[in-house]
Every structure is written in structure tokens, then in C-alpha cells.
Length: 541
Image (cartoon, rainbow, N blue to C red):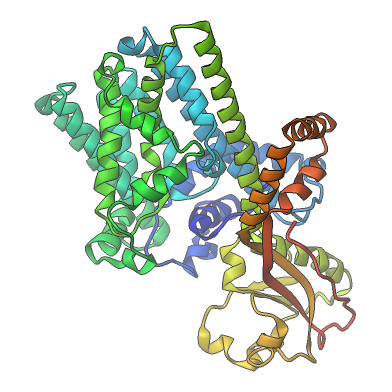
């Protein structure tokens, strides 16, 4: 896996799943959220669902752990990272299956049946040439924990189970992400406006669903938080009513259209094709119109909120793709030559998209220095533990940045000889005596900077440096593209030979040519505790 680690946005769900895996649902005093509750509460329903879905595979993994989890370049054999990968695999699989089911629902829709296969084909091409959705599909972001239910609800709408699909979307919003509730309400309003649903007949079911979902989240989350809780209502009050989301940055109304929608698509013309698709009524069943119009209206509604992120509008992807696919299916080249040209253009664009997606995935793997730093340290700890006195455990401090960029509970070695400290109290961190208790420290400052405030240079020794992504060397990319265009035949032959030779390391080295890295994290050893270390500079890959 090219990016096995996770970032801060995924941390609540990931740590909650870790605690469910290790402590079950009763031993709550060990749960991570007791010490690090976050700014606002998050629901445990999502992590609980992922845990239940992963449990069978986790059981198999645990039985055969000795055979299937050898030490590798990105995780140590004494950690539980194989469990983290298992959980992510299951979540990614759920997202993939739900999106495939959505694609199949297109061809089964009665009003789309004449062109359903073509629309389905274009939907598949556009869908699988994306980067963001499939890169994040296995990540425990709340948005992608909720996405399988949203995709399933949309597919139910296409299949004619409109009220059931909308009810599922609304329930998902109430429990997991409040903006999905707005998405579901828009579905319901537009379905009524297009006379697909009758308000009098369907409102009781919507109300019943809403009350049931509210009871579920209140019961589950009150139990886990040990305090009366309705997380998404509390989140809405904090972020929208009190306007606290502005603390994470604000952007103009039009930002989703000029920045984030183009960012979601490797093919920047997809949103334009989707706009044209709004004017292809012959292929739009009422159900397709509900999905497409709801997606567009939802983006407009979310634009009102000043704090914007691409993941807040990811639920509109199926509607955008469906609209673009309807337009492309409408295009019927009249001659064989035009068909051949169109086929060649599609193959070229899709190929470029896949290459870009692979490259973008590789570049993104450098955004997790904390995960790599922890595993480099684990390699050293496993050796040090052999001769370390059992009555005096080693203390390791993980700073905030390391935990925000990949160091998770799954990545820690489970041993009575080790204590991982995550102190954030500034008063303690500024006390020089505080640092004397640690054998190892992962920090984001070089020794010459830390020594004046925290670490004495004659006591601490740098043992590892982990690099992170800084920027893309655009000038080098342009130069190499210009050279390849000057000798296209040689470039094509060169690429063909590389593909045939399966020289993965060469492709990695070639990709590294266009990436600028910087020292992101430093690992230090306390020489007063153990002076037998050697300095080593390591990369994050």
C-alpha cells in the first residue's frame, strides 16, 4: 500500500476503531477520546459500524498473524498496523462496492434503459479515472465512513426506491455528518417538486426515520462519551451557529466552483460536461433529475458556509458524473473516422488520468512523516528492549505534528516496557526537566533550535531524520515535458520498455525527480539513559 498511514482528520475514527478492537465496548476508561476528546464530539456509530464490518477479517488476521504480517518497510511486526490496514481495506471495499452498485443502478433505470449501457460505460470511465475519491475511499475520514450509505441511498433512488433512498441519506446525515442531512433534505424537496413523491404520504416516514436516527446516535454516543450527547447537532451549533469553523480558514462563495470541483477531477472538463448534461432531458428520468439537481443545489447551499473543504461536497460526485455521462452518451459520431478519433481521445485522456493518479498517490505518500518516524523508532526500540531492565519502562514522547501525520495507536508497540507520551500542555513542554524522563523524542525542530529551549545538545543525539513533501518541482516537469515532445518516438519507446520491464524502482526514482522534500521530523535519543547509539539519517520512503 503506497500510503499506509493516516492524518489528523482521520484520527478520531481510527483511534476509536483501535479502542473497539483492543478493549471492546465495555472497557471505556482506556479509550483515547477520554484523554483527547477533540474540539467537538464525534459519533461512535461510524467507527462501530466499520469495526463490526471488519471483525470477521480481523479475526482471521489475528489467527494467521505470524504468517501474514512479517516486518516490512512501513510497519514493524510488533505493532498492530496490519489491523489498521485491514480496517482500511474493509472501508475501501465498502466504498467500492457501493459505487459499483450505483453504476449498475444506472443501466437498470427504466427511463435510462435505451442509453443505459452507454451512460454506465461513461460513468465508469469518468468514475475510475478520478484520484481523490479512490485515494480517500479507505481513509477513516467521517465523510468516507458515511459515503457507502450515501452511494447506496442514491442507487436506491435510481432503482425506484426513492423514499427509502432519501431516508437512508437523511439518517446518515443525522448520525454521521450534518451536511449530509442537508443533502438528503434537498433530495426530498426536489423529489416533491418533480412530483416523484407526495408530501402527505411520505412525510411520516421521513419523520420516523429522523427520530429513529436521532435516538440511535443519542443512545450510542451518550454511552461512549459518558455524557448526554448528540454529536452532529453539537457540531452544527459549534461550527455554523457560533461560526467557529472560520478559525480553520474562510474562502469566498465561488471557491467550490473555481477551486475544489476542478480539484476533485483529474479531468477538468468533467464539471463542464456535467453542466451541458443538464440540458439533455431525453435521457434524464425523473430519478436522474432528482440526483443531478440535488447535487448542484447542494454545492450552491454549501457555498454559503465560509469554511470550505473539498470533502464537504464529495457526496455530489455521483450526480456530477451522472450528468456528464448523460451528455457524453448523447454524442453519436456519424462516421467511423469520428468514432475512431473519439475512442482514441478517450483512451488517451483516461490513460493520462490513471498515470496522474498513480503519481499523485505517490506524492501524497510523503505527507505522512509521523507514521514513518514512529516505525523507524520502533525498529530501534525492539532492539533496545532486549537488554532494557523490565522494572523501568522506556518513555517516548510523540509531538503533535507526528501524531497529525501518521503516528497512530495502531502503530505503537504493545509492551509493558514502553510508554508513549503525548503531552500537549505548553507549561510542561517548556520545562527543561520534563524532557529528562524520556529515552526517545520525536520532534519537528532540529537540535540546534530545540537545544535552546528543550533538549541539551550534550545529552540528546539525533538518530533519524524523516522527510516530508514540500512542493512539486514544476520547472523540472515542464523541462522534461518539452524534451519528451522534441523526441516523441524515443519517449514512447522508453516508456514502453519501462512498462515491459516492470522496473518499479525506476518509476519511483523518476517520480522522486519531481518532488521537493524537507526535513519534517527528527528522532532523538537521550544519551544519559543509553549512550550506545549511532547517528543515522533516513528518508520517509
